Length: 154
Image (cartoon, rainbow, N blue to C red):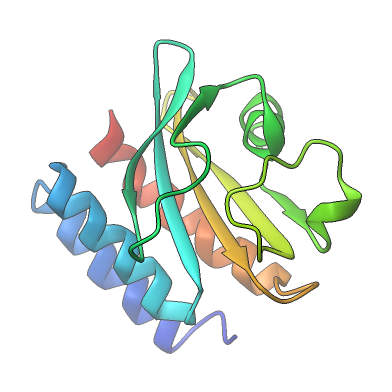
């Protein structure tokens, strides 16, 4: 994946959509699809932190995740929010923190969504059926997307 060019344009489109005031459930689903389409990801979920739980507010695809709501202390998502850093796992079956979303997932990247004041408000979860599917370019793209989405999750 190229960090500029196509993904840069997709980030501009996402930013414009968020700045226009997008934040309802249908608009959040459009954001998830924009992220998915930018890099041809299999699954993108956007979770919001609600009273100490991650709650899915948008996703791509028809199948619901196994855990639509779970405590912020659990899983790779919990590790990402606690550290305020993206967590990229090449083989989820080798990481004891992994909470299965889909049986076919092999690798995952979770990126915390953090406000400008440093408060975590949610996360972006991206999953792949391939081992070692994500690169630093994916991390960079998703961190930029998370920064943009923070405004919609506040």
